[in-house]
Image (cartoon, rainbow, N blue to C red; front, top):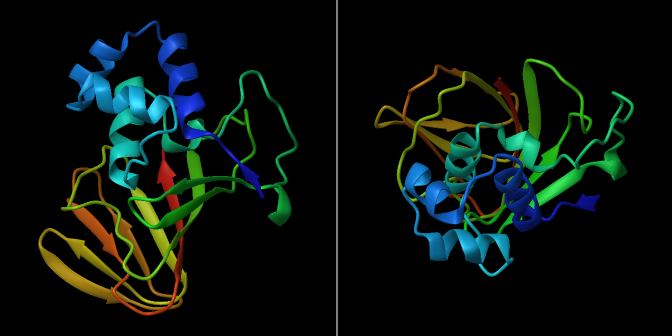
Amino acid sequence: MISANLGNSVRRLREASKLSLRVLAERTGFSPSFLSQVENGQASPSISSMERIAEALGVTLGEFFQTAGARRSPVVRRGARATLNSGWSKARIEALGADGQEGRLEPVVVTLEPGGTSASRPHTSRREEFALVLEGSVVLTLDQEEQVLGPDDAVTIRPGTPRLWQNRSEEPARILLVSAR
């Protein structure tokens, strides 16, 4: 797997948008100091924090994986997936879509380690999402209602619905997550 550098991606996308750290901070609700730490690899944001940064930059979470101007085959081999790690969330996110490929769907595989969580509290997304649990067990909180999902359980999450993913088990959980752009 190819490890993507979240900090470099945030900086590249912020600079391409001609935004200062201060303006990005205003859009995300984070401090300029925190965003600077993310860009310099000194802070590991949660999955929901990554989503807030992406939204403020006008991009999708998957675009953090992209390298400027890259065009590759639509086939993404298992060993060639770009990955991002979130120490805070105890999660690894693997890109299933090829760099530079335009499309309406953004597929990723999220591996939540035991004790892993997408955020400290439920958060919303402006995008519709579909999820399929591949391995393990997760607790999904939707609109304050907890659902325990196991292998082959699926859910469609409408835009604006508060959601929180948690792995309360002793084993890693893998989730296929597809967002609509």
